[in-house]
Length: 306
Image (cartoon, rainbow, N blue to C red; front, side):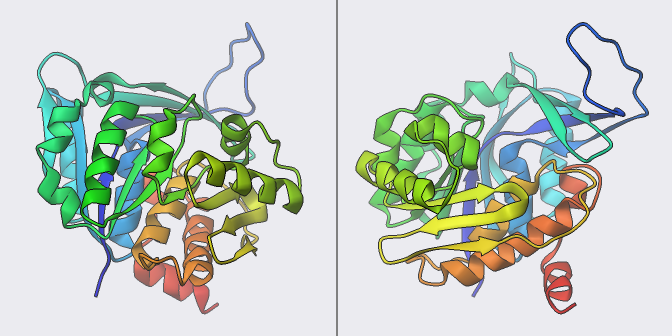
């Protein structure tokens, strides 16, 4: 039976500008190409979960504009339940501007827009959507107060909560106490714990610190190297698949969404789920654009057989 995944998160229209290299301060560069696509960390994670086989719902907010309608329609194309997406009549839909260089690395500027207007009451109004899930995922592109409300409800219904603390920010410590699995990258982990991620010992130290703060289970993604995991029962490192990266946008989001589609609620299959997620992410970085490059379950399985 497919996992049921609910995502509380951001909906942004992404505009990608391709540049030969990142500009220096005060420098003007000509762009080689401009493109727009549906995006936002929440939307990307939901699409990744849905394409990987999960029954997916979305909780979020868009503006009363063409961009908002475009975002909702984009999720619906992947059969994501959008009934819990609210329209804000005063603030426009979120957007992101991505600088992408020839090496596939990116820099991203985000305008939160309506994503930042999600209220606790709006989250509590869709308690049934949360209660039906196996997993509830949230990030930091929506208000932490809304995440806390959602995670608190999730725990009341036995739903496993996954926090992607990105972009890195000072965190309400109460959130970690209702977080079952926290999934930062190495930079975000260091920001939250104060412990730089340099080797296995420092990763173990991060896990201990998160555990002390309330989050008992941790995954740290380390880019092209792989992913570290530490649960209450085991820890280890799953290496990434070696590929030529064209665009790293949404690699981490694909990882989290794909992971949630395969992971068991007790995390007992975490290593095999991580391998699946790594494969999905390796496919994403080989394509251009965020959402357009997120693979399907069949594509992930086919790549695994090569």
